[in-house]
Length: 143
Ligand SMILES: Nc1ncnc2c1ncn2[C@@H]1O[C@H](COP(=O)(O)OP(=O)(O)OP(=O)(O)O)[C@@H](O)[C@H]1O
Ligand SMILES: [Mg+2]
Picture 1: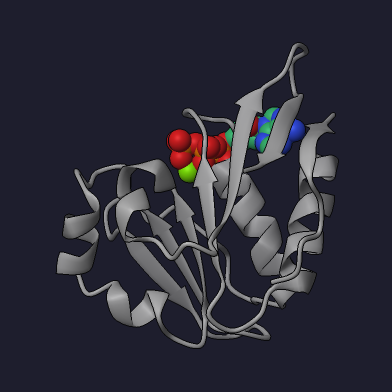
Picture 2 (picture 1 turned 30 degrees about the horizontal axis):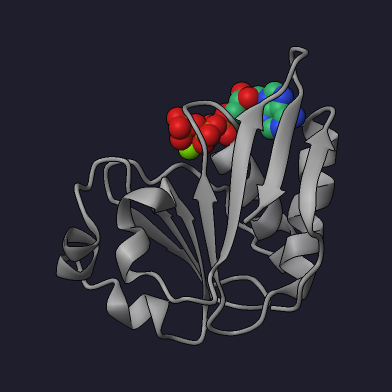
């Protein structure tokens, strides 16, 4: 994935989050890993939905909180959507067989990626989402 943006972005509403997701999706290449970091409700799943939309995924995206990972095959590239909130470490991510997905030809988008940071590739694109001043606003920072 090529660099698409640097620094801090203000997402004034969900439409801005969608625009960011579509841009990220447009830049994704096989094997890319997008590491999403941010508190509850900052929009990690929302951003993932829009990345999926940009990839042309036809199915509805639901947060894979209980299954940890969900795979979508209908887009331009296979999408592996992880939510590792319930895991304790990167080792646990490898225990569920994630290495194949991380090293595969699809793209991985990982919510709560800070928990498993030690097993993610060095060239993962990390995005930190935070609440901004006004209701409905978020910031996104490429780390
Ligand atoms: N600018 C914005 N960008 C994204 N979502 C927004 C924005 N403003 C408000 N929202 C709302 O914030 C909520 C974000 O929820 P979402 O499930 O995407 O967060 P999350 O970071 O995945 O949470 P969790 O930690 O529970 O997985 C949604 O209800 C969404 O409509
Ligand atoms: Mg979520």
